[in-house]
Image (cartoon, rainbow, N blue to C red; front, side, top):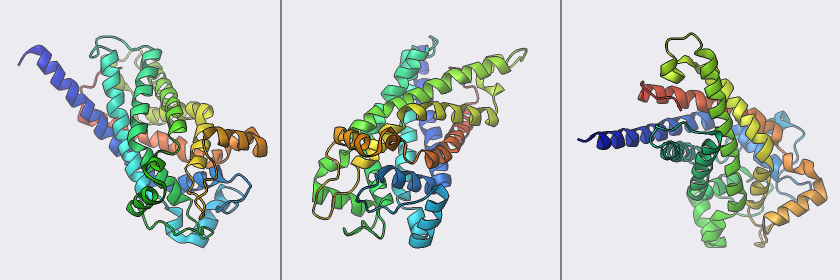
Length: 316
């Protein structure tokens, strides 16, 4: 086998190691924090007008009310598509991200700039959105099913997919795709901040350390948790309104088949008109409570699994 073939084989193995680590990280994240995701989604779509979602006073009140009136199934509504979507999303994201980084760095020969980190993350996010939008649509609708709904409830993930295609057509599976593509900037910002902070951490902790050439071996799980939370917070400040717009677009039509919002522009106009800019940050608190620790968990699991799969991991 030639040296170029050997390098290519190692690069392909590295990409699948990224995908495996991402999938495990995504599952661990969703399994631990799903109730907060249900609460966030219900806050996001509650625009104060006619709605099938009850009014909640706070995050704690929402969790208590849902658990009391809907039971365990209510607090874990949409869990299966959430696990499926998150696991597939993280797996594909890290896979495409690893491929993009490898391509832009010429197989690791070139140091990546912040701009190339941003481009790699944006490429990965766009590809993941195309694959997973139907899963997130179903998750949102299952989370918004309450005793106040008049339409026949979806019995589960498969029933939701069949019913949506039958009643609304296959194009309905891609409602909210526009905001989803804009949300690519979330991953791009998060991964760019993460990569740049990680290099700062490595340089700082490697001063006088003989293991500097081993790069990430000087970092521990606490460092990864801090990096994950910090990068997530930075991304959230910029992109949360896109999540609100997407959730409102993905609501189920009324029993007469009328969609509450026709497109993203409709959501934008009505939200500003009736709620002001604060409307674009509804559900931010449960989102912070869910995603800051979730991002920490994800990156701790991801980095540690990656180090197990590839002990000789190279920096960058």
